[in-house]
Amino acid sequence: MPEVTLLAVILVLSAVLQAVAALIALRQVGRVDDRNRLAWLIVALALVLMVERRMVPLWRHINAGEVSSMMDALFGMAISMLMVVGVYGVTELITGLKSKADTDELTGLANRRAALQVVRNEIERAKRTHRSIAFLMYDLDHFKLVNDTYGHTAGDLVLQGIADIALATFRKIDTIGRLGGEEFLVVLPECNQKEASVAAERFRSAVALKKFVAGEQRIEITISIGVFIPDALTHTVTVQNVLDATDQALYAAKNGGRNCVVVQG
Image 1 (tube, rainbow, N blue to C red):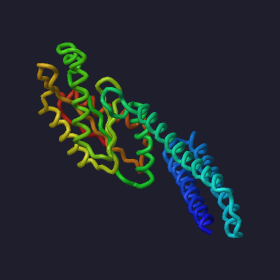
Image 2 (image 1 turned 180 degrees about the horizontal axis):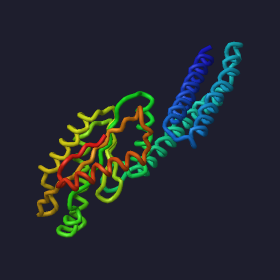
Image 3 (image 1 turned 90 degrees about the vertical axis):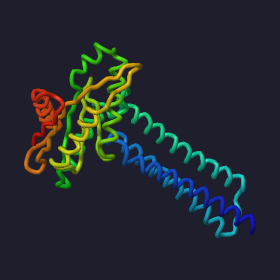
Image 4 (image 1 turned 120 degrees about the vertical axis):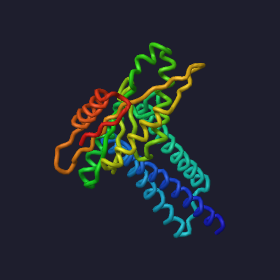
């Protein structure tokens, strides 16, 4: 009987490990895009079926008083552990690769492709939930002069420094992306015109007050910001609409003397 009890414990542990592997795979289903979702769902279902096919016959043997090979049971548990490690390792690898593919190498912010995908997703979510949403586009004033005067290395340090200020200024739920060069986009879910204006002005002021250090140089720079708040409930809003509208607001800020915020919506 002790051997039967030990075998039962091993089988339970094996089943738990296989279930954990299946749950990890199921969690991945919600994280990946449509192209890979079906593959992960098949993996999860396959793992669930493995648990059922392995456990039911073995439990019948135990209930009947038949003792299976302990080595087989231990081998099965080892396979179950490898299952968990393997599925977890693959998911972490995929997550890491996706994060790297979605990240701007210089600033650590979302790159253009990832930022535009967030815009697309948040537009659809705002339409479903009837919540407000704001978009903010900014670029650095006279940035070419910084590169020409202090060099591109200093220019990169300024871009990184402003990215850090943006991350510290905006909310965790906001997405900050680099569209290219010195032009950036911020997506602010569930944010109305007043809140977006306050956030934009706070960010503009923080940058204007900052002195960026590049070697022995102290660099001062300002940013211009355009803010767009679409009416997602009554107008057809697309990614291109958002880019055009925020770009127009940014252009107005540039024409308005730079180092200012212009709101359009």
